Length: 98
Image: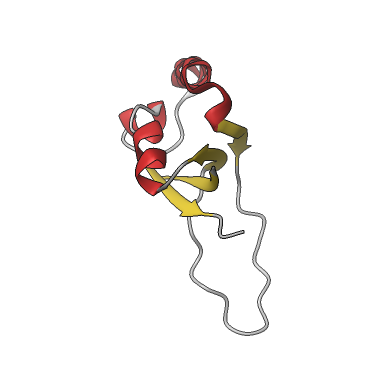
C-alpha cells in the first residue's frame, strides 16, 4: 500500500451551521473508508513561510488527510465520495515516494 497526502483547497469556510453539517458528513465518510484513512488530518491556517530566497507563492491549503491505497487511481476512487468535493472544494493528492 502507498500513502497519499491529501490537501484541501477552495470551497471557502463554512458558517457555524454548515460547519456542523460538514463535520457530520466527514465523520460518516471516515466510517465508510475505514482503515484506508491513516490520519484524518485537521483544518489548517497559514502560519508563515521559510525560504532561503524568494518564497514560492502561498498555497491556500484548508486542511489535510493521509490515506493509503494501492495506486493513484485507487486513491482518487476513495476520495470521489469525499464531502469536501461535494461542497465544491478540490482535493490535491500527492503520493509519498518512500
